[in-house]
Length: 103
Image (tube, rainbow, N blue to C red; front, top):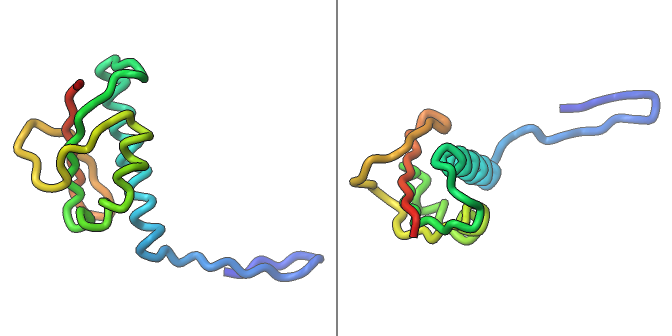
């Protein structure tokens, strides 16, 4: 995409590559977890044990494990199929699930 004004022309690549897509998923996951923490009236310093199932993204999301843990004050105990009651949201036609409990 190009933008032109009296100074000149600027080109911007608007394609979303795989890395940006994964980063977007991580931000969405963090947002949803934070919303649930708020609904459960958890304090900021209350640590949670977290399980995450990001469908086809599971292997790629492991690279962001530390970021997720820091942002939501959690210890990720599992990335993969969740057998407990869970919260879900959709990301690019994929069902993303998570479960947490206070530790």
